Length: 444
Image (cartoon, rainbow, N blue to C red; front, top):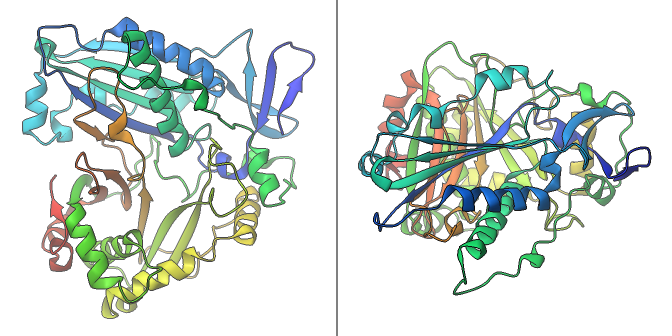
């Protein structure tokens, strides 16, 4: 329900849904790397980018709001008379863009400012209700050789679809500011829905407790943003690349027995098995998948709130590894098929009352391996053209919690780069996993 505050002209209140609130203080962050192929001319002028950015934030007006308590619920409040100004910074770095390319965009080569987690901001975000909901850092590399654009958006405000829709709109506006386009984009086609009650009404759910905001962040957060270390043992992030051809072969080898089994199902199980196999001390294992429900219920495809719900499966280590990979893929497909209106309604209820997510059982303990997959490979990151070409690379900063993975598209259509965080003590075994290396290549 969108509430127009009649006491303040131009104020709109969007009460958040339980799945929004479950994201806690986490943020969605991606970095877009652009190489200047013609160093003789100005590359992606700052003022043009800034102008397009401010036009876009007005279109995505929720990003100019603040999070507040309204009638016992956490809500997004837009006040047109006092917008919450976004952050847009520019910095220069002495590194040439080619150095990043040669390193395969390894995090160790990133400018320090680009890879920071903004710990101070995260630590105060709960008390500072006016903290920006979106921030942009523009890094210019030496010799006019290229730029990097890091965009950070509060996860409770927009999900992955909302993030990429913002980037698509921003780049389209900027291209028009730079001059006539070979294929002009009609910006009015970007119809957006920010009302969170669209989701609640679609599954016939009504919040039942006044202090809904008390629900804390849990396993549904795909991108953890916390100053508290999540593991005693050191961990690091790595990238496994699956080409379009290897994904087709993977689907043919293990998913062809059932037409309903997708490449995503098979890849999820392959990664889950490899991660579990490398964690030799575990006796049981769990996987958490994020399932976008927009097409599963009567929900607008341009709904910008969080619409990816957790789906968790648990089993013993032996059962996962001893049975054929194809059985695991079918298990995931069967579970995904049960994500319907009743399932979503039950998830909302459990999140609202801060209960364990569906699928949790007695194996949720220190002897259980936990693995999470968030699939962003369907998003058009590499279509983001500000008028100077598409990005050479799109990546996330080095901040995933151990056991989490993010799937990103490769620049070559059809491939997937899996960014995964794991304990350093497990990585050597992971690198030697024959089943994994049959289809994937460890890049970083």
